[in-house]
Image (cartoon, rainbow over all chains, first blue to last red; front, side, top):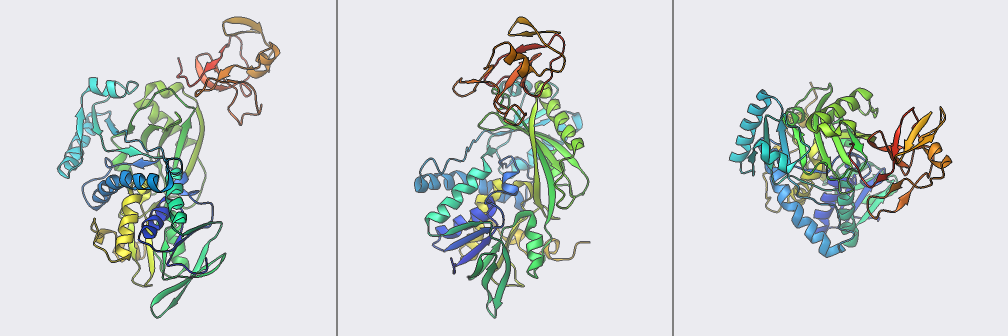
Length: 391
Length: 85
């Protein structure tokens, strides 16, 4: 492709969702990824589509909106692509948040109440009910809250399905091609310089995830997006061991923390194939891809606390990756006023899979100057947390 | 030393892997797949493929090619996905 309406840099789930939404509006989109599509952060997570882990505010609004959009988006993809290519292992399995101390129980109850007031479906669950819902769950829980709208999907399959739709609509997806720079004229972006040649275009979308800060700096429009490392342990397939997204009540404290040092909080769920994924850890250490044994131990201990039967379950492997972190824990979705035609869509930290559907939609609405379904203001590029020098 | 294989006592030598003991006693399959129950045994033999999984002392998903036997090990076939007993 020598010309495109829009070049998207980054073929993770966010770039794929943006490209899908733009191509649905009839735009010709070229998606480039310097590695393989959906091979970075998208391949390093757990497939969370959560409404339970956000406090009321713009992040929760986007999460709720995106959670509503995902099933519709997937239904459309099934119609367009057929059931096979659109199979993304979607499971509306619900989330269970578990407190194991009196202090955490009080905190969880108060937090859930604020979410309920914001319109999130929240159910307090008694001990017997919790055992029925999750038979292997610890009997030491002091409070359990059920979020029926929490869901899960397989992120690499989801990104693949979105990109398949882009291709079907005349777009192109190129792996192993990096966007190295932009050509601008008086009107803003006029071309993308890629390792596969120069592509004339009207706009470039920076969907490079944790690498979005680097990419933005390299083209002279720096934004504050940093990598935050995480790790997941994978068990062998187990028979019906964990039925919901189950996580510790201290998870929200960990996701909203800002410190660079290690934070772990237990998150446990099964995949369609039966393997159990055990997270989560957060650490800001640049792009150091090490998987420290200390972190593995902390994750394993946490999982065994919530599910004592997991204590003797062998861990088959572990994988790690980087989340795109912003200092105010909100994604960046919008045009960069310093370089008209350059759009940034990144900074979803650990919530990018869930937020992708709503993010793609919002980007396309902004791009086409259509009315938006969610308020874009909190996600704008020119907010102090994103464009001022880090302190 | 002696270990048990599916409830039967068999001889094993120090330093042998579980897979070596099983092969030596004529077994070539000691696991069934979780989807269609098809037989599996040793494949790569170097710990990479996870095809030779077996239950040892109640712990499932032990790679027979990686684990060295210990006196009294209780080794049994693994049927699909199992939780530790």
